[in-house]
Length: 138
Image (cartoon, rainbow, N blue to C red):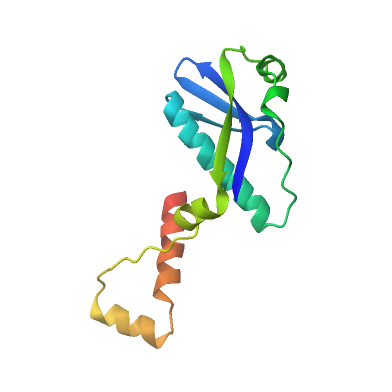
């Protein structure tokens, strides 16, 4: 199902900031209009996916005509240099590729380590995921 929300795109020195007034001022940015739109789609998909996963209420989208760039800019204390545009995403389809899709990886480990891990019934996929997440945090 397609989700469509209005977003305010504010021109900055280095690209655009994007704000979704209907979604608790959810924001992202991009280096160009195209990049900002791609980031807005990703941001919108991630936010709506999280709400749905956590069983939270998904806010209704305002009508595009009801969003005032000037009012939002004043609220955010920024210059009203930009535009309002609709951002759409099929959250379920987006999630299949970006959030839920598993990717098969082949790896090589020493034979003794493989035997020791199997004897302890260690889940190789889970262990690799946990190690990669820890590595990414550092």
